[in-house]
Image (cartoon, one colour):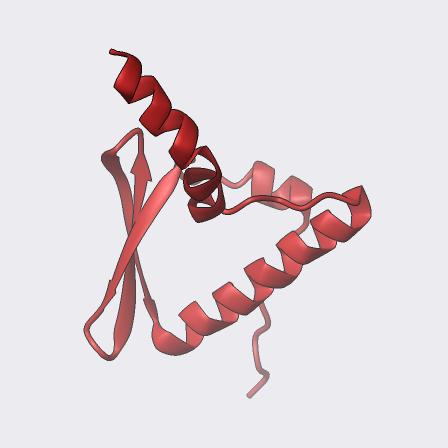
Length: 100
């Protein structure tokens, strides 16, 4: 029996895939010990729930991290995390709240 392999996915095949496209600007995750569920959030509202087995979740995390690191190297920039942005703007947010 011949092993079937997935076709290579290029930027074009990903962009043209006939599947729903969901945008998110936040996320939350939980695990039941066997799987990881990520709730993708758009403007503080649930947009999509994705469940992965732990192995797929770990592979996704490693590949995504490498992908972002490569973008940072190629563009000579440091992409801030959401936590970094909150921390760096905390003082200005508190000052604005105090003016009201």
